[in-house]
Length: 87
Image 1 (cartoon, rainbow, N blue to C red):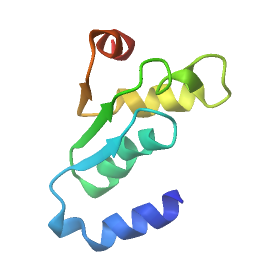
Image 2 (image 1 turned 90 degrees about the horizontal axis):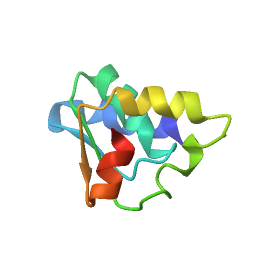
Image 3 (image 1 turned 45 degrees about the vertical axis):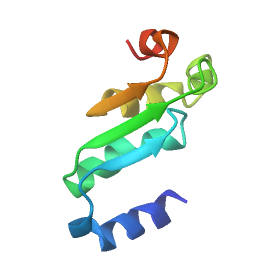
Image 4 (image 1 turned 30 degrees about the vertical axis):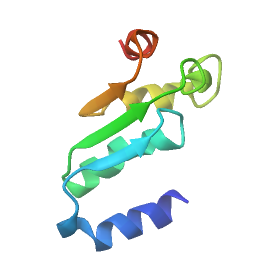
């Protein structure tokens, strides 16, 4: 899945201004390293408190997801609870 996404973004790199993902879960957090490869800023919108961050609690992917989320240029949190979870 991520390889296909990278190929799709790479082909359209000149047409892309920002790499954007819907959700801060593990699958969507790949947007930040992909954006670095493309030289584009990254943005993730989180809308589900706890659910977007559920894999950060005791999961084997938690360290990777934390690194990916830390690489984001910006995020949109639709609630104060989500803003605290990003902090």
